[in-house]
Length: 274
Image (cartoon, rainbow, N blue to C red; front, top):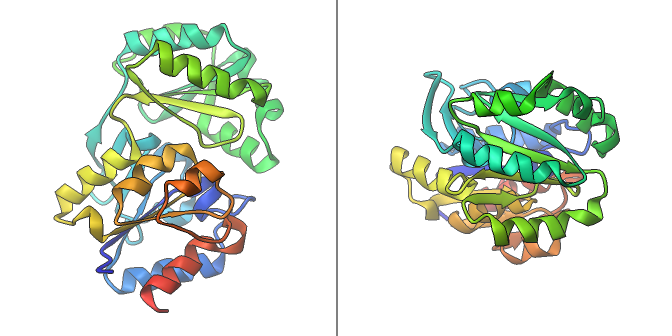
């Protein structure tokens, strides 16, 4: 494979369950970079929520953020692509989610927002202490989430955390049937993420490839959630993690070990013959 670019999801993929990056994984990333391969984090996170090890332009200049709603050039501090919800579409979805048993969050201009009451429930809906800590770094509590959303120029993403995870799939089906103007995905067992229709990691990867003169066939991508589907399909080699669901693994070209077993590192080593 003529590998020119590696795109990788973070949570459940590059990062271990405690949100750390293993030494072996960092070594594999640096080895790929030394061979001229571009490294591109592709995450549902905001830029402010990225691990410090990945924010240095010397390691990862280009970043796919908020599930593809933003492609960012960290070396020039410049957004190359924005695919965001209008306030009207965001409000329609917020009102729908208000009738469901969820904790709601909104990403606007690089910052996450929750209502005061929902922010107090973070520990209840976070699967692990590490996830809770990440959410508290990502969100701030606001008195009026609806007013904030309605007055925004645009909205990057809406996210819902289910108090009862068994209610997730029925709500996804309802959204897909009733609201066709959104991209709906999931990165955790109890969440859904709602973006603008064309804000996907796959579209963002194809856009970045055009900007850099790289063919998608020269890309390898890693992921574990349904928000990674489009990216795994867009890349020449789409790799699902061993901890990914069966439906995610079925859309990939290959399956590696889990995120806690250095699955990303193992596949990079195999492809590059390290």
